[in-house]
Image (tube, rainbow over the protein chains, first blue to last red):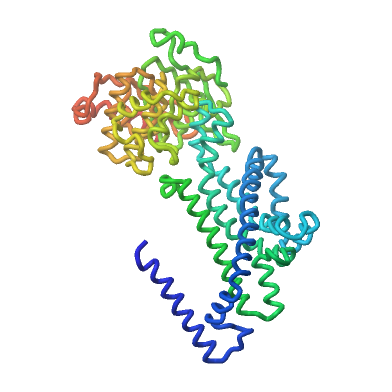
Length: 255
Length: 257
């Protein structure tokens, strides 16, 4: 990357932080409405232990949600694309499930998985799984007709065609689906925590956000939000790097 | 309608029976489009036949019917089902495979995983020595088409079906590949069916030029090309070449007007 690509966003960040600090202190905005960057920093240091634990908890829940959405979403897409009839039968339900808001079903997960890790991971899964299904199904359908003709011509078996043609054709699509899912998994986990997160000990970022909100600790809320974003970014970055390593050299020119 | 698996393969090129025979082959697509009407075509072993015609006349469809990629609506297709290779309009390489792995694909699909030497031999034949581990996007259009030819040759086919393989290449590269294809044909002796919209290319390469009409495709002319082999680049400017091209052009023009 050219220096400008690094320096420009960092410069912008510094400028915004400075402006934020000056406006908030200059206009004497109450801390509980909008804290200054220095207040957020102080809160982050003061609650460092809780935020670290919270980040770990939320990250683990998101990872579980992401991993299950990757596996189950891909499997679902695979089954869905095996026949026209299967696809026509399944798509309406997939779309129906997609429109159910996660906040509405989270209480159900508490019934099924109890409060804590399981139900939060389930919320994360529900939010993350649809981009995976959509992308994987689109990828499996996107095989070049002439590539397929080649496999027909050489009398390839179903499995040969899947592993040597359909799976590699779908890979770039799946990678972009997984990238979206990685960010969404964190959002799903935080929302899940609002409803059914650990209440003590291993409280996640969503739980910290809620309790800070009740106590009007706005600086801590800002710090927790920042931790959520960083967790999401880290997941997104890791998945992007993984995908890039996996897709290798042909990736850039393939699409 | 893929009738009788051909016995010609077993009997070899010395057999007097033709390598493929199409009788009254018609194809109507499910959309109602008539692609082919009553096509008759007989191709002898080792013959190089070019098929020319206006675009959309079904000449590519005809090739796909012979390859078994499309099924004729009526008529009989007596063509080998094994030992047939197809070369597509664009190189049609798998972008996630190296050149070597692309060429190895047909052998791999046949369950032959120990064919490294044959793959490299095929690549050397088409002049791709040293590009084994490149990816398709790292090569020029001409080199990709060479790799595509290598992939077709690696199974040692008895029939090569070529669907406007050089249409997208620049002229110099096209000439070079035409000459290389002639050399390969002379060395390996396969039967070739070469679809092109270039009368010039057809006359230069083929023993026979089959002219097809506009949609629905029919065979309207079948001209032997009496030019000596081996042919080389100088033929393109040879005084004898012009009249041959002209005779094919006349048939095509008569059909178009």
